[in-house]
Length: 475
Image: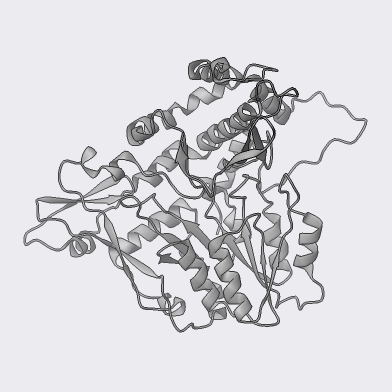
């Protein structure tokens, strides 16, 4: 499979100073050498630092600049930021219920739109959402089952969004992320000669369930180590575990790998997947924490993980509807065993609405109109008969904005936020004690949008914790 997005990825990296994860980090200059060439990373960091009043510390809310002043400073530091106004238009139209709020939501899940929260806001007629039904089949038996046209169309749309092709992968809908990990754990042939190796800097409940199943089958759980307080992967120790020369090359087990931390936004090298496969591991790529269009930069044409899990919670259907997707490389199905149950596999079906001249189905934030014929069919039969196009406005928005705009905007905002939080100090603390302590990378080009932090009182005690995973609130 040849990815059609690598050129766009490279263009985005060139234009917006991001680090291309497919190519890796550039080598640092040798000591004693100088260069006159422009350094986009240095220029980016300098601009971020100057986007807030330089060398200023804010000790009370009255000293804070207004939002208008801050936006003006940001635009002055990054003139290209104003080119992302299309994202502001979508936010104003689809997410106007977020106005005047800062929403700390869970990383890896989407924010529902206003039309999903209030279906009558834009659609005057009754607008049923799609529904799910559970399949009483196990993972192996689900391979090759004929999908309805509705479900097949949804799968094709999602695979196109993720830059995958049906010739390489089989796609299974699951009720949630936990179901996807549990289904795979039940089917994967763990045994006493194998390991399960995970790379997570926090306790992930679905992954913990997979580890529990693997241990029950006799596998040995291993995990990467992280440094404090930046949560960097200890590369030397992880490499030693992956290589593990005491184990047979083709019988290492399952390597469970996320591309970035859901806590700190730290990004991990794609090359870990290559190293694991070359040393006899099956690779499960957890893409649940990635944002819009990030999936398109996965470089799957180069790495092709054996399994891939991604979450579309809150992106499709009526809030808080959603589902998870489990992708299995077709060439690997023969490795999987046949579990006794397959609880968690689902089908997507259109909900039946009242009879009318036309029926709408909400997919994401977009109504789909299915024209009726006489005699009237049910919604599913109508769809299969006419092969109507299903539009997913949430995915369409991401495609319309594109990788370059989204990555540029997210990079500016998350780094600006980290810098802004660092300027907040306690008054009368003597040594300018910070109000907020952030974890993970500070100002960095290739950090993700997640942020972990603690709030401290004027004596230096943590009074409240905040992070992108375990807390959701509005301030």
